[in-house]
Length: 419
Image (cartoon, rainbow, N blue to C red; front, side):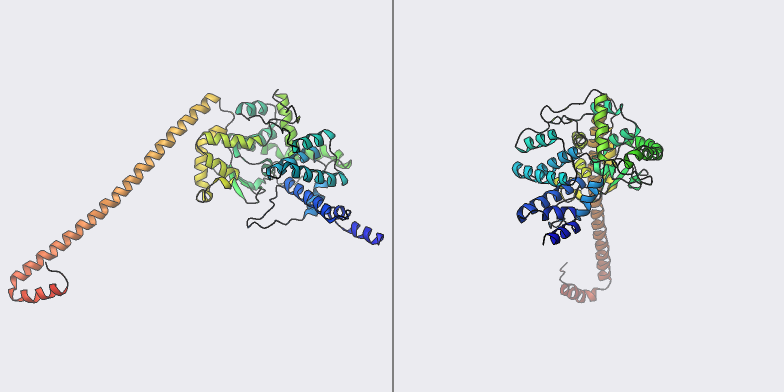
């Protein structure tokens, strides 16, 4: 029997094998649910389908892919998982248990975590204070941009001006960027709710992305060569020289790049309790929403960010052309290179133009309504004139033939007209 159990375990996937090692079925399911939740978080997968049914994924394949990725930073991934659990509104006690189960099955398969990371996350799950984020500003972004190469600047400006998540940006293919559109349009496919949506980037970001594209092929070729030693040592995955991704880099690399830029600019700030960066990558989405909201386009901001829950049914059907025009009117608020005083002036002018536009549209609508009423009145007047002309001719005819008067009166009377 023991040999049979070993055979079954060796033939099963890693998750199934781990779960099978527990005689208590409830405990095994707890580990299974925890690692599935972890994999959904890492891949941005929803727990349920649009119809409310539970989404089904090949978790064994996802787990194998995760374990093979030598570029993963397990401490950052566990922190990300903890945030996912808190966003799912699980109780802190429940979230802590799920996080612990997920960590144990990961460690059993070779993942390594720093003791400090585990302690900090456990403390947060007990209800202790989490990382206090600082408000992202154009000044902070501008200072960090000066410490980045063209690739880093293109990524940061794309994040700041599109409202997209980091994993959505890093999943963009070259064909997903429409430079013929004004503003330049992004087709976001790897979204949190798995629904394809669009967003835009500022002219400033578009110019930087085009400059990056001129360097992209050389970067890929160079990174493949520099990465060869790490691949041979089993410490990194092989870079794909034929990648069609706009930014062929990992999220861990982007986070490290951003934190290094903040340090170089003298802006890096770590939370006193958690020790984590307070200007997080995710703050770019908050920056985007707040900037557009202050410019009077909160609904547009939520729409482009994919926050459908904030929108009514009519706005969910907004067409790309209308959204693009609205974005162009306020893109200056997410353009980092504009001095603050010019940005305020541009916002004020945009507001005045918007009011003028609304006034003009109102007058145009009123004019169209009046024109329709006048046309209707003219038709009625013409109809009355025609009736009067026919009546006059009829009376003239009656005067010429008095003998027919009695017959005509009978005809008119039978028609219900006593005139």
